[in-house]
Amino acid sequence: LVIVAFERLYSTFYPAYFERHSNRAFAFAISIVVGCGTWLYSMACLSNYFVTLTHQEFVPLYNIRTAANAATFEYLMTLTTYSNIFSLVLIFIDLYFNFIRKPPPNPSLAVSYQRAENRRIILTVMPIEFSESAISIIGSIFQMMLGKLITFESPSSRQIFNELLSLPPVFPLFLVIFIEFRVGRARRRSVVIADNAIDHMEQLKKMWE
Picture (cartoon, rainbow, N blue to C red):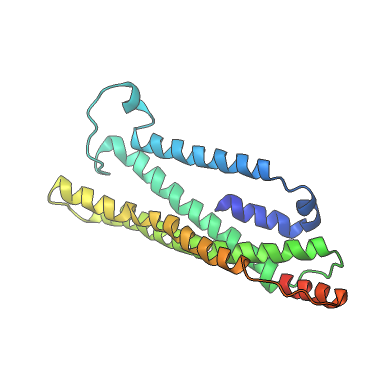
């Protein structure tokens, strides 16, 4: 989400350059790098930075009161909170420059199309961003605060508490499917082509506004 927000911010400031130099292969490569990086970081957190993959050892139940886990836990929760806040700030900047602040008029059809595309993508990403940030930030705060204030009677209670706060951030992954279905249905709508070429161009401009 941070990369998408950066991309939309760049295309907002330099729409003509972004339109001319957009590359699907580069975008696909970036998505692969982000996916692999996320997977590696997740595996590192789950395997004590890959120690358990090379050495056979018993792994204690995840508990922040364990001295070996406390520092890593605090670092992970702090990183999650700040990264989501940073992503939210970028989205609000995108909203300001694309919806609130009026861009200078530009006669180029490509620039008008790119600005309209920015607004459509931002509206698509907004539900994912807000739900992911809200769930992750609230979950991180609860993990840091309640984990220290509440005494759990058994290890299973502590594990259930962790599971309840760790699983909700997966919800936006399913939200993407519904958003993509809605956007795809809107893309399939028919465009009525007028007989007059001038009317047709005016209709296209209205669609991109």
